[in-house]
Amino acid sequence: MHQPFDLKGASFTIPMLSLREADMETIGSQLTKKVCQAPMFFHSAPLVVNLGYLPDPEQLNLPGLLALVREQGFIPVGITNGTEAQEQQAKAMNMAVLTTHGSGKGQEEQNPPSSEEEIDKPTATVIDEPIRSGQRVIVDQGDLIVMASVGSGAEVIAAGNIHVYGALRGRAFAGSMGDSRARIFCQHLEAELVAVAGVYLVNEDFPDSLRTKPVHICLQTERIRINSL
Image (cartoon, rainbow, N blue to C red; front, side):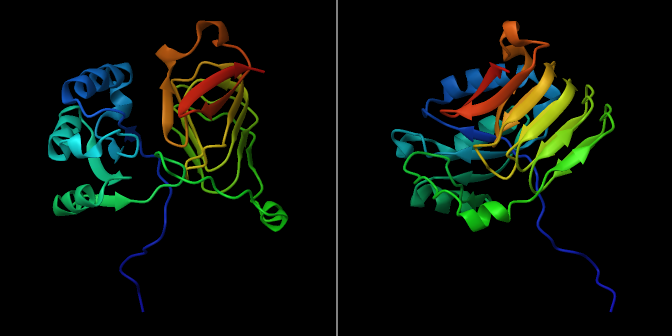
C-alpha cells in the first residue's frame, strides 16, 4: 500500500538563546546587536530558549520574552531547563519542552564512551570538490572532511568535527546534534559564521590576527574560541 508520507528523524541547526539574566531591556538591547551582525542568518530562524543559567528563573516574564524574540524576527519553538511552572506555561502557548545534554547549570557530565562505542563511531564523510555558494552539505553522523574550499554563502553541517583543507568562507556548524566537544579546522579562515553545538560566532567578532590564517575552533565555557594551528 502506498504510504502518504514518511516520518523520520532529521538533523537541523537551531540557535539556542541561553539567558543569564531576566531584565527584558538588557536582553532586547543585546539581542538587537547580535541580529544586526547577521540579519539574513537570523531572519525567521527557529529558536530554543535555555533558562538553565538564570539565577532566579521565577523572575523571568516568559510570554514577554517570547514576544521580544518574535519582534527580532525569530520563531521561538521551545524552551529547555525551565521550572515546572515555566514548562506548563510553554505548553499552554503551544511551545515544545526540550531536554538538552550539557546545556544549563546542574547538568551532570556524560560518561566517557566505552572502547566498544569508540569502535562503533561513524567514519568521516570526505568531499573532494569545492562547496559553492548556495550549496549545503549535512552530515548526520561522524566528521565532515572537505578537501577543497567552502565558498561564501555555502553551509557545511556535521554531527562531529569539520575539517576544511582550503578556505572556509561560508558557514560551518560542527556538533550539530549537541556534541560540545566537536571542533572546526580550516587552513584559511574567512567564514561568515562558525558554530559548535549551537553556540555561534559571526565574522565581525573574529580576532583580526587570525583572519585568513590556519585555525581550529572549539567551544570553551559556553563560548567559541578560535586558536591558531
